[in-house]
Image (cartoon, rainbow, N blue to C red):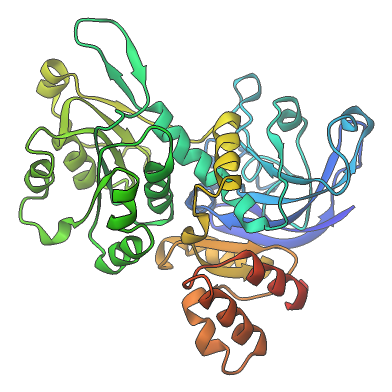
Length: 420
């Protein structure tokens, strides 16, 4: 079966190509991809090529399909998996299958599977590890966002706290405690705000920081202080670029004690050191942002490590249970993933978007793999609509949801956009 896909050949070498998938076997599950959400991790894979830990060393000779936040429909099923999947089923995928400790994953490691493709063959490892999950909705972009939400959920679950004098780790954030999300109004930060406000183990006080006032204002308009109060949370948005002593000011919001849980969303040394400086006794710092610099480092106060039990944790992905939790919460209407999406595009927009991702403002860049469309900001729909009836109609539909992408707009786009 033929597919069109964006493949990685080496550092900054991405190519949109049509080729044949490997022949179907009894272990095959062939799927149609509908949506893929471009992740900063794909940019890092493109930047590093074969030096990336998940990308094969011989990627130049055996290119891999990029993209790992994807959703779609099952097309064909080999007899070994016919008891579990059938054509027409919706799916989402947890790419980090961790089969026998492997860090291989769709979107980095496989010739036949990645999100930026029209059709893929699911690796046997993902099937064995039960990480191809049912998705019972016809709104596909929400399914693509279950993977980034699983990463966010994992970071909350990985936080831990110690009991003074006991050798016990209590997992998870401190319920009713003080939590800070630093550099947290990018797409993953927005998801973390969403999850913190609506999960079953909430902080009592949540402080969100950044140095971009426009992005802070957008976050505050979506996840309002008033709504947080209804959830029993005292929410603060702080532009640390406008504060003379950010660490001192942030600690003051807790009455001086500091934060039980801090998640750092930027691989920037001053932000990491600020995170360390605001930890309370037994405070846990989660370094969420994965750096591309293999020698990235920052100072940490080891006096506090010894006497105040401050400590660090991190996760680089979620697991299947985290993704199931994301699906459950989306099904229940407890999460608002549309807030993450600021741009849409077709498969032919993937290369330029991926290679320039850090330079493109906004949140998630959502790709519809069967259409041809330049990457377009939702905020630009109105202007484009003056010359293009499709964008005029899309602008009308997103106005109905306060400027957020939605299922109705997705259906219109899929029915009227130019096929790839």
